[in-house]
Image (tube, rainbow, N blue to C red; front, side, top):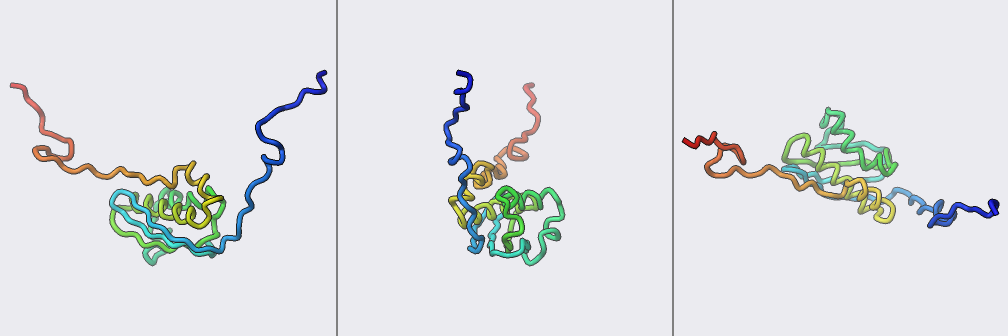
Length: 154
């Protein structure tokens, strides 16, 4: 009777191995991403993986390696590094906000290009969610948004 013992699973072996084949990356895409005060417009064209941000290469515009990694994360996640040329226009905000805005724009463009294959992975990684945190406005009677002068009871 020990010979009849099998490992049962909810998937049949054929279902587990079958995955949608990756289509040829020959479709361009474009999207807008926002973060803090920064707005990024990204165009993705099939190519060699060159990044152009406001007419300058990525390494020159974002010298910080962390920002470069943040921007290229959607390509790394999907295994599409070097498949698309990115042309981006960014205005407003600082380096961190601009990098976040560009990552969102790239993720949205990749989602637009191939929803069936790209969306689940991008959604699970949280790349399609806009980070809505912005600077809180200054309140009347306070020094900053929440900073008040010291309170004295007597």
